[in-house]
Structure formats: structure tokens, C-alpha cells
Length: 197
Image (cartoon, rainbow, N blue to C red):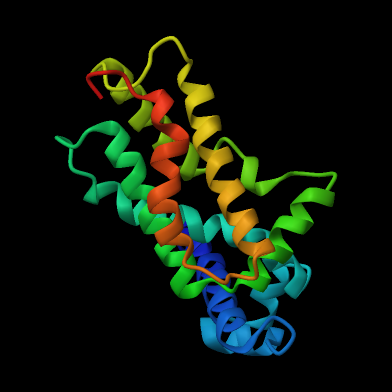
């Protein structure tokens, strides 16, 4: 039970921070505002984070929370390729609606120069686990190619998502990420489908 509370405390701080970053901007959001919005304490905040900058790398947590919420909504009868496209649409809609382009760009730039752990590439994340489950199911059903390893298909999918997010950031968020991906993702990844898929 204590582990769950720890997860919830940290999670509440991350969610509150990113909401405030989106609403007020990164520079205008203070640690005190994050503490107040999350209903936690200063001691708890500094137990988990060195400061506000440490929260930038936690966007992967928000993405994983979105995937945790989406997993039960997947239709087991749905084609695996369509399931992947559904996940992408939902995640990118969340980004369009609640993630600041400036923050996303800051996160991506920090991941480029970091020498330590790169959160966006952590294969233990819910994101990668769920994608792998869908891909393996698709290969078993003959919907996705079996001559390409599941890990490689997941890598290509994630690469495509990151490329679209990167371009969106370069373009200053001047278009809807979700709408653009709805057209581009299936075109980029169609080579992964079988004739049956």
C-alpha cells in the first residue's frame, strides 16, 4: 500500500507541474505552485526532484499514464495495425490539447544532450510494453509481418512518432499534430502490414 501512495504522490506532482507548465508557461511556474496544485509538501517535492528542471524528463510518465488509460479501451477484435493507429491518434490529441510545444521541444533537446538515462527510450515504459503486446498479437494473427522482429516494428513505430513530434516542434506547433499524424502514420508504417492486415 505504501508503494502505491509513493507513486501517487510523485504522479500528482508530475501531473500538476505539466498542467501548470501548459497553463502558465515553464518560466512562470514555481515549485511552490506545483506543491500547492498537487496537494503535497516541499519535503516530498525535493525527495523526488532536484528542482523544476528535473520535471522536464518526466513527460514520458504522462505519456505512460495515457497509455495505461487507453489499454482497457482497445477492442480485442480490432486489427492490430488499427490499434496502433488508435493509440497514436489518442496520444497526439492529448499533446495537441494539453502539452505545450515549447515544453516538448525543451524535453526533446534535453534528451539529445543527456549522457545518462534517456527516458523516452526506456524499454521498461508502459508505452513500449503495450506496443510490443499489440505487435506480437498482430504477428500471431497474420496482420503484421513476421519477417521483421516485433522489437524492430516497435522501434519503427516509436521512431515515426518521435519524428512527427520533432517536426511539429520545429514548425512551432503551427498545425494539429493529431490531424497530420492521422494521414502520415499509416502511410509511413503501411509496409509493416501483411495482405491480410
